[in-house]
Amino acid sequence: MRVTADPETARLVALARAGERDAFGDLLQRHIPAARRLALAALGRPADADEAVQDASLAAWKALPGLETDAVFRAWFLRIVWRKALDRRRSLRALLRRVVGLDDGVPGAASEPAAPGPGIEAVAIEAEMARAAARIVRTLPRRLRDPFLLAASGDHRYEEIAVLLDIPVGTVKWRVSEARRLVRAKLERLGWGGHR
Image (tube, rainbow, N blue to C red; front, side, top):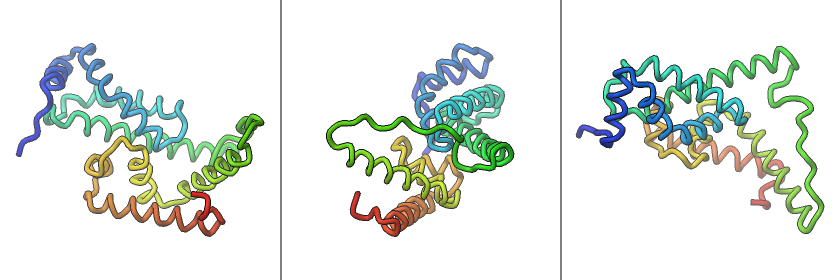
């Protein structure tokens, strides 16, 4: 069964291939929110995600003549975004190691203290558990972490994640399940089992 793009996507792709930058801009606007969320899942910081999406947009414009069919534009573009985000993640990590010897954040970027009020203890506990979970997710092997973050974003079906990561759908499902199991187990070992 041949997959076809909606008529507007097909029209915009045809115009963009003919060199119409405005058509390419319109095409991108349909997918920028998903692209930004995808890059944010990989990078964690909005500014870095925006830069990855910009890099991917430029790369997509240059590679557009090689796009085989307009029906796959979304998956094709999101795959470029994912690769650019991973490239940026690797370069940011290398920079942090070189400059400050850290691997998980910028020094001095402490968060604002929570405002006093009812339930502040519960809010503080929830925030600490979220930080613990984020640290655990960062320690997962990339092959588990990437599908887990993509699935957790809520923006991608398993089939889309499989295309983005170039792995079978069954492998995506197993890796997401395994990542969840590991995160839960590690949280429980740290004493967070009863706080979910």
